[in-house]
Image 1 (cartoon, rainbow, N blue to C red):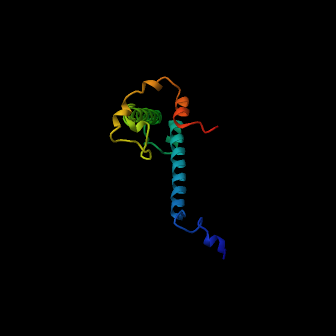
Image 2: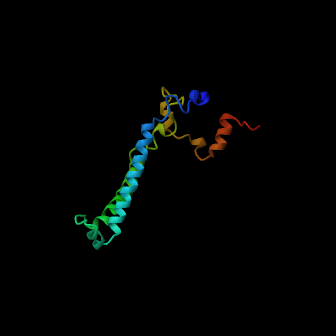
Image 3: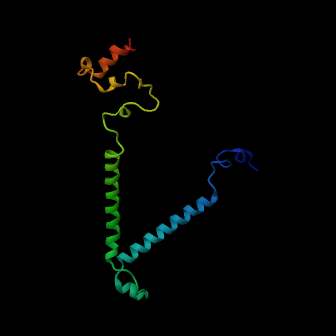
Length: 141
């Protein structure tokens, strides 16, 4: 018996993948490949060949173009919709303080809160690097 493998977290432990998951994944892989193969054989084979194999009931060939086209259009719509949703709905307006700071920042939200919304005329057009050097010092010296 291999004691190293028995005591390893990779093979035994809370994060080990159960064998049933591997079987389901393999079955899904094989099933998806068979479904794709049947779809391509149906869409590319002539009607006389299907009749020769005694297959008389099958959908119209129009669906071989309609289903992939519909899926591509749905993917594009979803991509554009999610991009616009993230930009228009999930993005904070630029005048909110959350754009600059997060929950880990220490911001004076008390009596000096109105200071955040007013422009400081003296440093309005100066580069941020120069302002930081004056306010906080230059660590490179």
